[in-house]
Length: 362
Image (tube, rainbow, N blue to C red):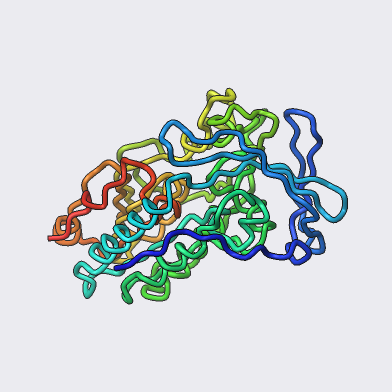
């Protein structure tokens, strides 16, 4: 199956690019509020290279400043895939072939879903934010269009820079609390097309903020850029009683964060600390007859207990562990498989711990 190397998409007119009103000063350690201001647009942008590559030679990092039409400024950190175009094309082709293999396996018995964690580089406005970098939007579309017909596919929408600011952290590559909430709703809507009995989206409850915490996300920690931070917020979905094997439950983590019983220094990976990586999640009060297998990365960690609350039992596999699909379908009765990962991992297998060969089919 042929692949297309990533190429630059057309630059979207800044006058048609509404953004959120997120203003910052030039002082270090400054945060501001985000409010919807759809009439605002980008007047100008600069992207200063912070690191030409990380230790794994897979990303370049930028400090981005966007000037808005009301004279305010938006500051955020971004990253772009730095592997060469030939390698991207080769890995994209391999991923398409392997995911076709995995998602076609016993497709008459199992529902398959893929949900991608979108990056700014995948969008049509990528060139407005990082003009030095080519957009990966073409590769993202090729990936989406090359999946088997039985697979339902969706991704978190970054249609405008406003979406990017609202749904992802400014200093970390993961989704924010609102991004997790929106992705969860989209995933559930996708699954309910096949099995409406799994129930509707749960109420998110109150948005909580970890007291006294300045969240310097992965992009800040990897580059040593500490002039910007995020508040660390999350929703407590008040999940029904359930059992978590292989990790501490999200509910217990929330208690620790709100009580200040965490290491919240500048070098702390708070996202990974809050969201567990369980092996199995059991909701004994459910009676859906559905058993879910999640093949995911840290994006899946942010919502695996939440999605699992719609199933009787959920099994999770994160990169670096082998998964025998036959065993899970036959011995464990898996009825649904969700592959939930960041797009650069799905498309280009940028992280070495992901090996599609770990997922056995027959």
